[in-house]
Image 1: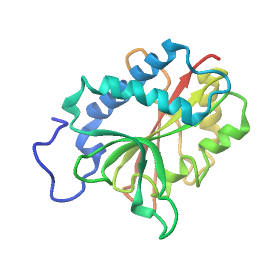
Image 2: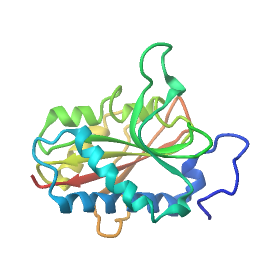
Image 3: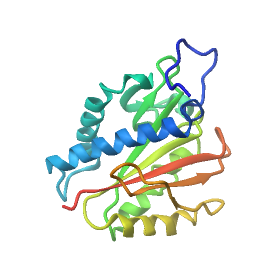
Image 4: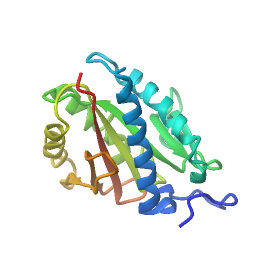
Length: 216
């Protein structure tokens, strides 16, 4: 299935459905290749903030994007989703996304969190119902899309152990979702996914989980 469209659709479309499994894996491969580029720089330190890591990672995403124009999407850093915005204040802002060029609400988004091994604080933030994965599950992010991604920056520790902690706590959420291992991407083993039923937005929703080790 061709990822790029020749013209604008008449209504917003589900980006995940449009991409298909193959297209989503191409996006995820691009994200993990950009992670490898950032890792090679040895830029991330034990005290690097979530926002600073995301900014540097997004630089590498953009560099790699320039050779993948067939996607027909637009990468955006700090994307506002006004679907569930309040009348006052800033709309919910996802860390970055690949957006349809015609419809702002049609996108494959990714939310990033620091996720060091053994840190209850970071684990809770990753799974938080208001600020973490919950923003996908309550429809504040990606209401018109059936898939998105959570990204864990593992500055310290082992991604395998982190995935076990995430899986254990994730299972406590509504409907007891299961974190399962996805087919590995080229050169990247720590890709997982979970399926969630949503009351708002397209359901079920598939959340991909990528855990990036920096060995600080």
